[in-house]
Image (cartoon, rainbow, N blue to C red; front, top):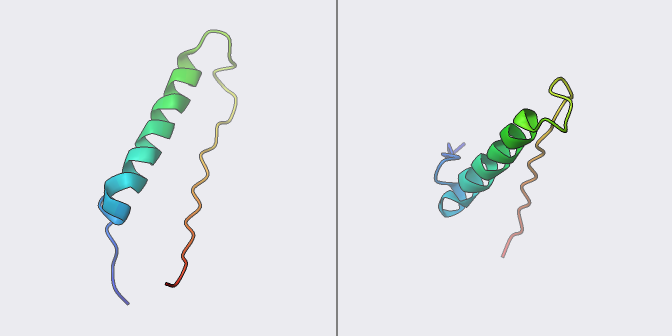
Length: 51
């Protein structure tokens, strides 16, 4: 089975989107209007379609 590098998967777009979402979570954690102890979740779904 071939190994896929998630940093370069989809031209790096997957990594960029995950990093952007992690940054949004971190902004939410430090927001004084949110519960710092609340759980946060990022869900990644990858769909494949054969051409």
